[in-house]
Length: 314
Image: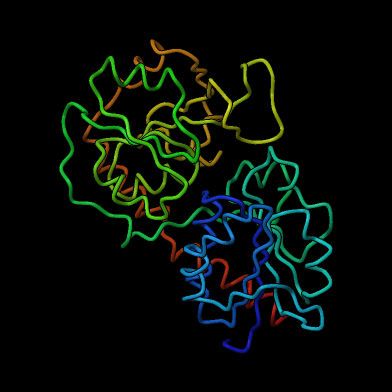
């Protein structure tokens, strides 16, 4: 299998859930010959080199695509690169990380179309869905949680909305947030009693045994207007799925824990306080168990390995 040549085309401008998803998958597929090319409009991200340095431990980072090379399998996740993938790939695999962004919906026919949630598979007509995988050995914690929360991590690439600050202040909870220049978020999760976020940030926090409140910059600027452009830094409201628990997890997972399963609309301090009062420290252990059962990166890697072998030997 080491003879199989793979190319990842990554259009990444920031450290996001897609960024860490790509890292986990590429790390797991290092038994193959993997080339990675970054096609980014963000010169800071490319010049930073930290993320690229980590990727290079498990793959060959190339500066540009050699069009004379034919790869056995090409992975891509943005419609901008569909024509390129067809030129250099014998087989192509398109990954959709959501269903509300136009660039996540392929325009061309690919040998395999994979979504990261059941909902995206249904909406986009993908061939299958493979859940986000988390490195359960890296994302783990033995820290005891406070029965009354003292610290919250807002795990999102944007800063918390004003009313989130106000709610935490009134409840005497220290609010921390993840900054895009920080590559490793495990320490911040470790130090927190609970995490507020959506998508992959939910799964990372669950893996570390934290109660999780699904909420973020994931809605229109008002609840009656649907945006198709994804998340934005200037959103002053959000949709929440409430707290992740054993009874609702599969329902939330179906929509990638994005806030759109329950659509609890939050745009003010008092509603956020009401949500935050649902904190239960005992959910930390439950979330870790759910992560072990459903969110292992090894399961994700095995699924993609099967796809690669199926396409290569077809």
